[in-house]
Length: 93
Image 1 (cartoon, rainbow, N blue to C red):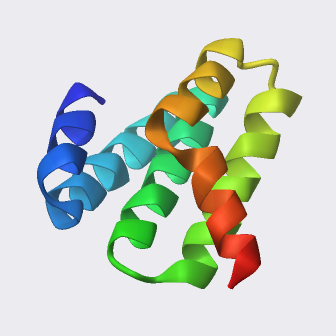
Image 2: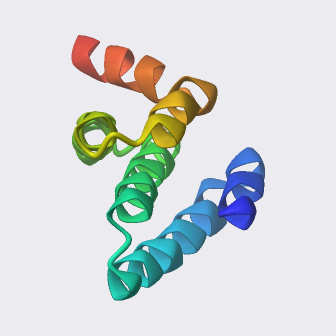
């Protein structure tokens, strides 16, 4: 996860690959919170790559998922990553 965060600061493509790997690992482990976060981070990578519709869907889904899973840690990281801003920008387009 740390690698995905670092890569996200530099380039969206490596960030996407890192979070795709994290998503696969979370699915294999059955970790729903990590799976949800990885999905949202993939949405953020899609946003950085300019692919707005799937980005908006993933990020909004992850935001709702974090609340439904009671993932306060995940939900609290959302503003830091700009997810809520992405949802707002995406809704305006």
